[in-house]
View (tube, rainbow, N blue to C red):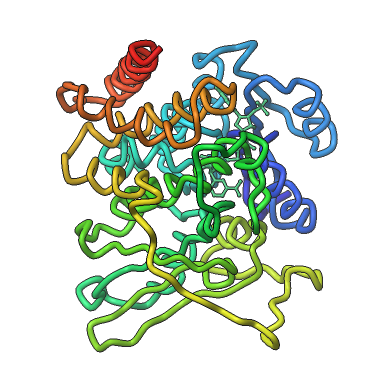
Length: 365
Ligand SMILES: NC(=O)c1ccc[n+]([C@@H]2O[C@H](COP(=O)([O-])OP(=O)(O)OC[C@H]3O[C@@H](n4cnc5c(N)ncnc54)[C@H](OP(=O)(O)O)[C@@H]3O)[C@@H](O)[C@H]2O)c1
């Protein structure tokens, strides 16, 4: 297997993890899977281990965080795909970054909550999120000082054209118009919190001030994001909405893999692309994300933690869809934490902010 890249996948049983394995399966001469980490799905992990002949695996429910750290420390890899969902991904992403190898980063929460610590230790981060991959691709060969603004596209989620969001049911929020993703990120797309988290992620990845990171609604999810330069040129990256494309790019950059399949090919004829301004009144989560960045560190950690609690309560039928931003806003207003001094304090603030959100929730009922 000389010459092939050794890949570690954190969150292998999820949507990004499985798509990563689909890409790798097509290029056995280029990639070798050397480690797999998952949360609790033992059967799927075992299946993947056998299919890809992987030596090292770790299941959080069996070995805990220490077991995951041990696997990361002891595995020799060239690229780590960081695709654990939620704040559970922060420490594993940080440990992988510490090894000085490439991160193919999907777990946005790790940059939202610990962008300063992770970018400090990481040698190379190639984003997997389709929007950030698009911006990264538009920036190749460009000078940072010539960038005017970056523009993240958002599909607008399931409720772009719906009124009366009070009555939204969990199963409705779990239907994304264009992308097939995990539950949390799908609900976040419907509230626009996903875009809010991506604004914070972009802030850490591309180092622009928050006022120069914009969001535009683009319901077709064909233009994955854009960069405007100081000469008023605008560059965009387009493609069908399929995560295998940005995943493959993050694995193989600066090369591009010959991805085959008609379903991956963008048909330009008949495309009808539209762009709209986001409605911040209808979707307050986007405003809250910008506010948390302006409030400064550690408020993005609080935003992210409160959102995780709120989405969970919503999916369990305990709060209304429209109470998701209300719970987050009240948690942000009540939070009073000092900035963390290291990555372990990030985890501590995340835990305390989740407790605080639950307190807010209990105070409502
Ligand atoms: N899906 C997308 O298209 C997409 C696009 C852009 C960015 N992202 C980001 O990528 C990340 C993953 O998203 P996803 O949609 O792939 O999520 P997902 O389908 O819910 O998968 C999550 C993965 O994380 C594992 N996991 C959960 N808790 C864990 C823990 N405590 N320790 C170790 N592993 C744990 C899960 O294992 P089990 O299956 O065993 O529970 C699963 O493998 C998220 O941060 C999301 O925002 C996703």
